[in-house]
Length: 146
Image (tube, rainbow, N blue to C red; front, side, top):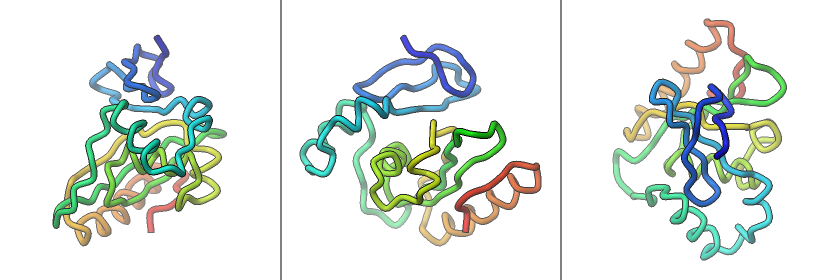
């Protein structure tokens, strides 16, 4: 059993996805090495990876947007803040595989540490900015969040 990359607690594994069992942490991370061996450009393979990991499917709805925080490697004090219409675990996987991802999130994201939602796109856009500002004020280096 792998340990949580954030709090070092035990995790549970579903396919290539590990979720922290510590409810106070709740982080999740993909086994990037294993995931990158898959042909994720094939929609059927991507769908199977997401289903095996028990990632909720995309729901096209007015209130289907999320704001999420990715922990970044290289500094214990830096995060990526983003907004998505996908489930945050699917969006995190897209960052890892380089699909519509910034260089920072593609190369340095180590875990999904938090997310909020679902909410409307307008509310998510405002929350992304306010969350980034709040974390910045707390002395955390922010990437994304605009």
